[in-house]
Image 1 (cartoon, rainbow, N blue to C red):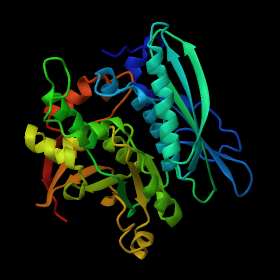
Image 2: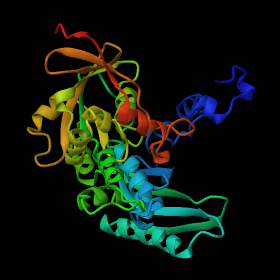
Image 3: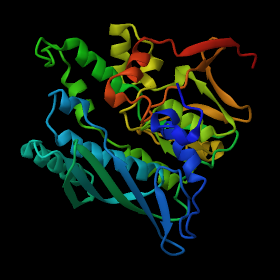
Image 4: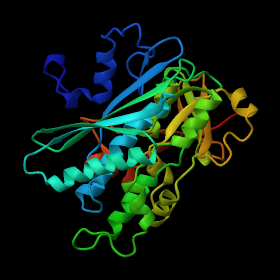
Length: 365
């Protein structure tokens, strides 16, 4: 039960989202800080034509590495992906990544080497610089990454620019991570190892996280986006944050599910929307000026760019079925100090077993 006296509240009482929303209002951005606090990446003006974008982010403890499904190169790859995903959502072009490792003194040195190798490999795969970092002792193994990118005032995107009538576009497909993870869990042998029936694509997907490099480049060049946010805390969080005081209308039939999500939904009898609300897919949600989008034809050809709804004047998020039924959706948000997917606890339990959509009536429109 949350404590009523704020002086006695813990971070669990407050939660990550409320803590940040209250704390950031007390801070005054420097005049060169273009987008202010609270966006995916921080944009700092260098001169009239150039912007430097910064990001620092703890990389979540990797489930697959802890369970022995993959080595610790995955953690290094994740540090690059998580930080660069935020830069890409902010309209920047990543150019370099650094990492800081905090490790207990009895942690395997070979695993620490693997983390660094994974980080360097993912940087090389995307032609950005791995710029080193720092290693220190601490009570638990933690990995913090930071990234720097470049852009211009015209390409910087925030979470605040959505307008009524804007299209909501997802870069990527939904539910691949959670669908793969749950199917791997179902296959484990008595020693906790994935069984021979495991599709290797599932393992590769969760151990090789990838940001939306190509789609974000297209969106950056198109200049059609009005706002953006990555899905590091889930689709619900991204849509509700971008809508802000306005609302959103989402077409359930338009949601683009990963093949692993569809296979998992069929095998384990889980609604696909539950899997799509999980995290780990490193997608980006954009709001896009509808006229600009239509002017560009198919919106990116073979790229994974999918229109899933629109921003509305009417507050609230409505999820529309193809039969005209309208639903509300339980807030499903990956949130530190409350419920994190990496803990393999409450959040995954909810997504695996709860009914998250609730009918509110037929769509009269």
